[in-house]
Every structure is written in structure tokens, then in C-alpha cells.
Image 1 (cartoon, rainbow, N blue to C red):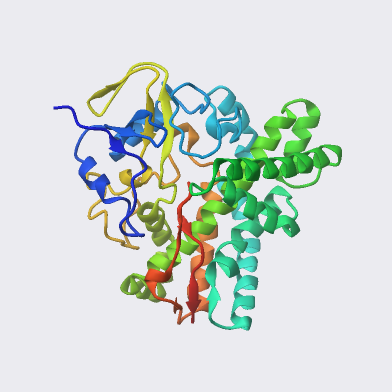
Image 2 (cartoon, rainbow, N blue to C red):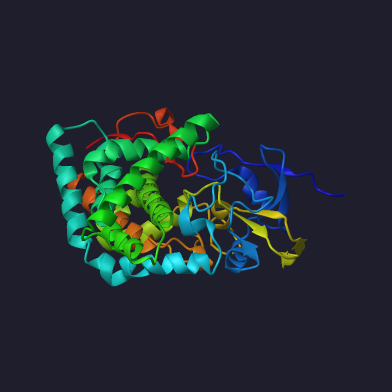
Length: 393
């Protein structure tokens, strides 16, 4: 008997674990899911299937194609998320523009500045005294300051772009509110790029602006690129720092291990990425031709939801996947995606997280929750996280 479509999105019973229904899907083939708009698509959840889908050029990332699974509340706008929602060769052309900006060597040069920023924020937190909201005092401003300096975005405008970017990807607001927030952020970046085209600066957007002046990039392409980098550059890392801290506080034995052995911070960051997988609604594709995945045929024109959070708890790929183990040997998680569209800023995100946790654990030896765990409010957004994290030390 054919299985009924699974309602999507699925919801968490525990804030530190993906929806329980995923466990029952990880030992079988892809299933059909029913979206809020009434459309039915395939969903892949096993790690091997997820990696196969994300690496296969026969599946398109273009969200304006018919039957593309829509998760964001925004209407599909061509190029709205730059090369994230493009296929090759356009995807490769735009991505190459930024490749040199995020190499291991280039990001390594940013380490001293990131560490100094972390220390300054912790100094201010400590001087103010407990309790404090770790999100607003540390987790959010650290990556925001870093991405502003990297891009050449005035940090004086951070309240505006943080609010507008967060509003545009929330799933619990009216469509017109999300669209308005998206439009305001786009207008802001349109003006900033135009300003840098007139007077190029020595920063990432300044270098992008030079490509606009030379005719290598269009103005709209540069604005979309700026929007993607600004949005992804602070939303994801900020939520990982906040949620990762909450995870450590809910696992006191593992927190003690990290304090006793700072060398564990790097593998602990990888484990947080796998365990939390904050792009918790996954990513989406649509088939350009028939393709077999996990024993089923996905026909041309059918949409595919790629359940990253499920894949990173696949017992066929990770031993005891529901256990948070900071010493877990590095695996092949898909928290940053996989294939040609894998997150271009992942090296920067890792460095920011490593520095953030190392400095925070050193400077705040008595770090603890300043409220009951049940009082923490989690964000219903495309990027999973928490609104605030009251802590003491």
C-alpha cells in the first residue's frame, strides 16, 4: 500500500533534536511530503541520498523553476539569493568572483581581528556584570562585526540590517511583512553598492564594485551577492554560537571536558555543526530529468526537499548520532551543504566559532544559565536558533 505523504515542515519535540519523525525515515527510501501550499514533493533524508542529490547537476537549485519546493515566505525572485539559487554556468561564474575572498589563507589573516573583537565584547560583558543575554552581547555582534568589516558595510547600520534580514527569513510572520523586510534590505544594499561603484573601497564589496565598473558583473548581480553574504555571514554563525552555548550548558560533562582540554574546541565545533544543523528545514531542488535516488525514481519536474538535519543524525553514517560528543572524530556532515553549492563561507564560520568558544570558556569559567531551560524561546525561522540566552558566570 502506498504511504501517505508526510506533512512538512516537521516540528521538534526537543529543541536540541530534529523532529522525531526523521528517525523512522532514515532506514528507508525517499518519501513524499505535503507542503503547506498543498504541493507534494519528494524528501531525501539518508546521508548518502542527500549527498547524491546535492552533487547531481540533474537537480536544479533555481527556485523560479515550476514545482520548486517553496520554504521561504518570500515569492521566488530571480537571483534573489544570488548564486545560491542558480545552476552552472551562471552559478560557477558568480561564485568564482568570491572564491579568493574565503580561502583558508585569507581567512587565517582575519584570525587576530576576530580574536580581538571577541575579547572586546567579553570585556564589555564582564564589566557590565551578570546576568547578560549572550545572544545580544556576544553571539550576534561578533559575526556581525566581522562580516561588516569584511564586506565594507557600516557597522553603525547593524541594527537595521540585522532586524530586516532576520524578519525576511522568519516563518511565523505574514508574507507582506517578510517581503517588506526583504525589500528594505535590498534597497539599502542597492545604495551601498552604487556608492562603492562610484568610489571603490578596499573591502570585499569594494572589489565587487570594481567588477561592476569593468562590466564583469551587473549591478543587480552585485546587490544580490551582497545580500546573500550579509544575510548568511551573520545569521548562521550567530545562531550557531548561541545554540552551541546552550547545548554545552545542557551537557555539563561535555562542557567540563572542553574546559579541561582546549584542544577539543575544534572537533567540538564540528560536532555542534552536525548535531544542531541549523538550516533545519533543509534545502530544495527540482529534477531537470528523471533520476534514481535511494531506490525510487524522481521524475523530471518533481521537487525535492533535502533534509540536512535528518542526514546529520543518520545512524548508518554516524555512531550514536543522537549523542553530543565533542571528541567525535570528524565525519562528513552536511551542515554546510554539499557539492557545488556548499557554503562558500564555511572556513570563516569555523574560525569564528572556534575563537568564540575558546575565548568564552576561558573568560567565563562559571558560565551557567540564568533562567530555566524551559524559558528559552527558539526561533521559527529558516535558520534555527534562539532569541536570547540569559547567562551568568
